[in-house]
Length: 115
Length: 110
Image (tube, rainbow over the protein chains, first blue to last red):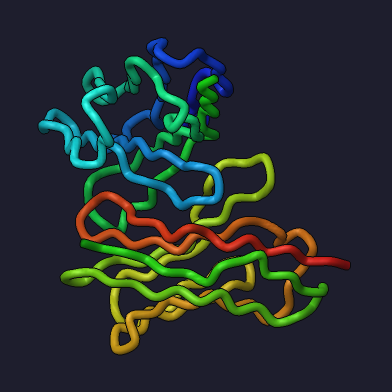
């Protein structure tokens, strides 16, 4: 019954390494979103999953970024060959469906630091 | 594409002062408009929303009115409290994903 959870809460990695970030949405929420929040910036949309439809990947900044979702449950965001500019807080959100007025519930985020 | 512009902060107020945080948007169609708040050390949470023109969203003493003619959704509160100190994000969605402004930090002193 809890909200959206994300793990790890903090991740420090070296430049060039791959990282995986995990998101557990609220049970029953068919829509899942990934955003990136750089220091002092707003949130940037990365990718969106809705049910079994093909994901909307239009926000992914490069082909180093990818995400998967198994059914209507857990999602993993993978960043390959990390760069220092990837340092940010990565936020996951879920909602009941794709309708625009549905509230998105956000997780606490994963703070990624690339050294 | 869609965009949201909100006033830069930080906004510094004394307790019980009146608050306005300006937000204007550019979007095709008829977006829904939102204010999200991020308290220190916590995740983003929805503060209020409005789904059509002239709607007023309200919550916890905060209000915002969807003004289509001025493409604005300004956040107001008549009397702020120290506990309102947070970062406030204006956002819109035309289909499903949210487009956010850069956020405005509010600092309220006793």
